[in-house]
Length: 270
Ligand SMILES: [Zn+2]
Image 1 (cartoon, protein in one colour):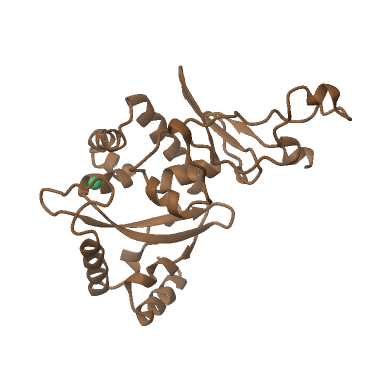
Image 2: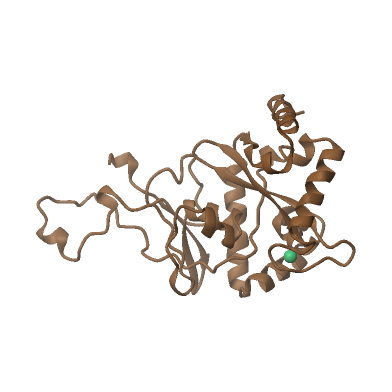
């Protein structure tokens, strides 16, 4: 590992470098007082965009987190690997320049409901904008039926209409690819949390925060630290353009419709 490849430990006030998260051990620490948490970028991504149940299914083989502790950083390697106590004193060479290993424990409440902020540079990159109205109607009705008209995260139903169709995207920050993971049926309250920035603009931020707290059984401190982290990731992701990967649309449309959508997505969006 070269000196300029040392992992970085940044706090809430630091600027995130463009390549933050590309080095093993890059860590973001946020929170205050007795509630200080360290979150690796890799984990932050999972934490802010994946419902927990899905993360367990699709994630990179996470180990079962004991008592609400999530440890999902890349395996530390090279100088960053854990050393046995006393190793340095008796080691073969001086390792004065070796970085301290990242904080050993990441304490993050398990999340059933997460915030999924679409980067500002990708606001009009979505399935709904790329397919025609009848196709969108078919997709969303299929999603509703498969979920039996119940929210797939909290099991609830909305008072006016039971559920809404939400596009779940994953963001690969290394390749700048925005990948459609699936479509999901959400009650209006959970859907509002997903688009927390929009809820804020509509004056419904407090209601969305309360719902997020309730569904995840979080404290006020936990929910506020989480919201802060979600917006920091969003700001970071909003600094560049994203390439769409619409392969996740395949289960919902015919191959002809998929090809037509891919062609439309290739055209410059106005
Ligand atoms: Zn819900």
